[in-house]
Each structure stands twice: as C-alpha cells, then as structure tokens.
Amino acid sequence: MNPSVELGISFHSSGQEIEMLKVTPIDDQRYRIEENPLFTEMVSFGDIVKLEQQGNIYFYKETVRKSRLRRYSWLLSQDVASSEELAAFKNRVADSGGNWETIFGGMLIINVPSHIDFDPDVEINNITISKDR
Image (cartoon, rainbow, N blue to C red; front, side, top):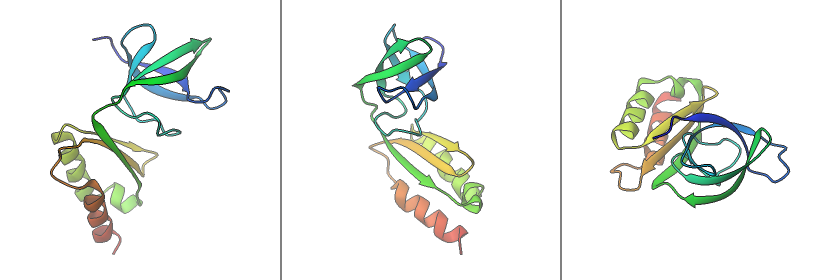
C-alpha cells in the first residue's frame, strides 16, 4: 500500500475553504481518507474519494466508496476529555475495529463498525454525567 500523505483538500468548488487531511493515494485520482474532516460530513475516515488536483489544491469530486464505519462526534469538557473513563472508551473503540481522534483537546470523533455491542452515545453520556457532577 502507498504511504499516507497530507493534502490541501477543498470540499467547495470555490476553493475558499481548504483543509489539510491525511490520505492514502490509491491511484492518480482516488484516495482513502485517513482522518475525519472538520469542515464537512460528506466524507469520513476510511472513505475512498475522487479528487482533482488544481495547482496545490485538491478538489473533492465524489465519494467512490463509503467506509463501513459509522461516524459520531462530541464536544467534551476538559474533565471528560482527560478522564480515565474516556481513555477506556477509546480503547473499546479501537478494540472493536474502529478509529478515534481528539481535535483541539475537546472534540472527539469516532468511527465504529455497525456491529459493535455498545451504543457510543450512551457511553459518552454516561461518562459525561459521571464527570460533570
């Protein structure tokens, strides 16, 4: 497999919003998304997308294949974000074949297979309730 690279990708035809994302090239136009974009939910971790290069910017054209992972995201307090309970939850996500990312210290994005035996929203809610008391 090709090594991952970081590209400036725009999900808008104007090119005004560009996000640096880690991707794995598949061929000259198809790439596997290796992290979740912040500025769009059109694509997520694991999706195969078609991009068109114009100068130093890569423009999103279409999603070729969606990942089999479901995306969830939460904005967490500092206490929750640094808690042992959240660390254990992130380990469960990874053990289930999923992926997690913490952005700006408090935004948690996870991608999990649909067959998991836990509800991410319930898990995060329980952690939040126990830490924010």
